[in-house]
Length: 246
Image (cartoon, rainbow, N blue to C red):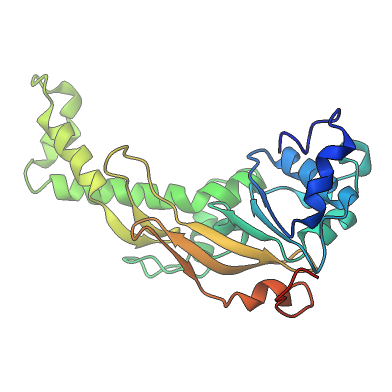
């Protein structure tokens, strides 16, 4: 990405890229991804003989314009066609949670959405389902803690004279042990950092800018699971699997 966005780099840098058919892009900011896509378009590094693997951060493709990025949204679509995108955000963009039923409530995210506080659209798409499951995770941790402490002890932990706060230690341990199927998917924590884990989903773009799920990385099992055969990559570009460099 650094080379792609370097305006003073000489053309000779791009000569070796002409023979490359598989390109990898890992840029965290959406506007940088837009610049990368436009650069690839101008270089002609797209189409039936190229595959782009990209980290996808939720770029608003319709906002890409020549004045800001050097190419249009239509031109970007040509580069994106057949692109394989991997991101934790892809799961929400694909709408995977709309009909996912919660383990206890047997309720879908779509049915619960009206209960949640309205936010801006990007924030709603990315976080509301997690907010709901966060509450459930805390509730499950509290219920498990009540096996060893009374309700009053849990409610009044701030006023405890015990400076070691074993109750809080127990509550945190119970929280890290949480493991359930929520409206945001498989919900569990990293035992070393306490960070909620989210599986990274893999999607593929078609010519109409639709993103389809073709696999995901299971963090708990530490394995990549593909739900579509490799041929889907080339079929999305309107061609067959290529066996040579032509």
